[in-house]
Each structure stands twice: as C-alpha cells, then as structure tokens.
Amino acid sequence: MLPITSIKPPLLNLIGHRIHRSARIAVSVVLVDRLYLGRASRIGLFNLIRVKRLVMKADSHIGHLNHIHGDFSVCLKQEAVIGNRNRINRGVYLGRQYPASLVLGRLSGITAGHYVNLIVSVSFGDYSTLGGSGSQIWTHGYSHHAEGRGRDEIRRPVRIGSNVYIGSMCCIGPGVTLGKHVAIGSHSSVAKSLSEPGLYVSAELRYVGLKRDRAADPASWPADTNS
Image (cartoon, rainbow, N blue to C red):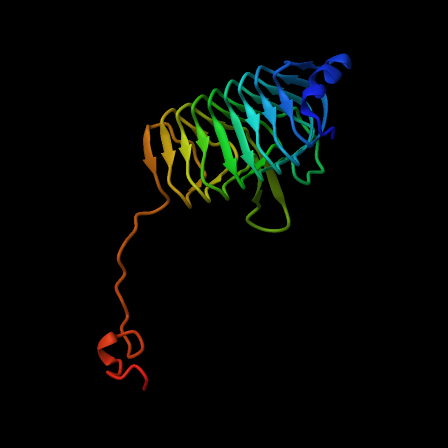
C-alpha cells in the first residue's frame, strides 16, 4: 500500500522475496507467500492480488483494478500481460482443492474485463491473447444425470497453445485444448478441443428474410413527415 514505488523492492527483498530494483508496484494490495518480480516488471493501481505465489518475469505487467484471488499460483513470463478489470479466482467450491496455476507465456495477454476460473490450471503458450472483453474460461462444470437429483462434477485444465487469439464474449469450457495458431471468433462457445490451425466461429451467419408490415415498409409511410 506504500505510495512510493521505488522503496518497495528493497523492503520486500529484506523479508525474503526477490524483487528487481527496476520493478514497480503502484498502490495495490498484494498478499502472497512468495513474490518474484523481474526486470522492469510492474503492477498497476488498485489491484487486489491474494495468491500463493506470484512470478513476473522481465517486462511483464499487471494493469489496474484486477481481482486475482485464490489458493493458486500465477506466472507471467517475459512481456506477458494481465490488463485491467479482470477477475481470476477459484469461485465458490466446497470440494477438495488441488494445486492450480495460471501461466501466461511470452508476450501472451489477458486484456480487459474477462473471467478465468481456476479450480484447476489454465495455461497459455507464447504470443497468445484473450482479446476484447467479456470472455470466460471455465475449468469445472457439472453433468446432470438423466433422472433424479444426481450430478457429477467435471474438473479439467484448459490449455491454450501458442499464437492463439480468442475474441470478445467467448466461453471456453473445461478440458479444452486450443492448438497452435487457432483463432476463435467473438461470441463463440468452445466445448471441445481444436487442433487444426484456422478461424473457428459458433455458426455461419445466414439471411432469414425481412418481414414487411406497414410500420416497417417506407413505401407505406405518409409523404408529410408532420402527419
């Protein structure tokens, strides 16, 4: 919470963390068991970060107003980015918890306003982006029985390869693996792994016609716009 960023690295090193002298932390709450900040890494304003281990390699950064909370580790490799206003957590979960981590490869990024669920791990390769805003990545869900009250929990890690792009408002389900050079179009739901490089969208846009009525047909409108 100290406002003077330049004095934070030596103070944190004194209590056992490893902070490069050029690393910077703005006014944020950072509660971790182990903190590693590499050369020119930085954490922006008004973040709440409460995790077991945070590793940020050289030139990586976390933006502003992020909520990163849970019993997991976060690793940002060189030049990786978590942007602004993202929520990254384990959610409400009453069962047994297993070790989990979020790993962003070199120059990979989560832009703004996304949600990442970390019941188990999520990993990004190099040069990949969760772009736009409003997307969700889920590592758990439920399969309901055909009859009765029963349901089974599904817990599967999500693996996103290198050179992958995911557009706005997408939902990535548990156990999905996206192979190298896959692009996911906006507003897509991905429930299975994709390995073939290329662009994937949820459905082809199709023309369904235009229903005309008196209100919608300009030919039926009065010539006098004041009438």
